[in-house]
Length: 132
Image (tube, rainbow, N blue to C red; front, top):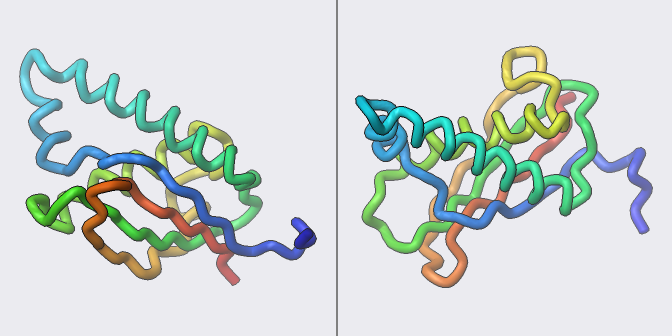
């Protein structure tokens, strides 16, 4: 078994598809505004559970993120997918106590981001790596 003290990279999968930015924008308008808060809470719980189940520990320093977005089809634009998805993922990790903050003190940057079609397993693979 790999020594956890030497581990600098973790990966976990969040089943989806996660909401796209356009969906979130629509949830924040008018009487539907409560739906945004519920979606944010629900996705934060799912992200926290996926990360904890994969053994992702609390991060002491700054980290970088990479994402592989797996979509049902090509109907949604990549920028809509990742914009909302990143927000929910980072907020979920902060809520779980894995990240201290999703601001400058916790996030060093975003690495690679890929988009693939996988109708049988939509979601996102999240890779977290300690920044040097």
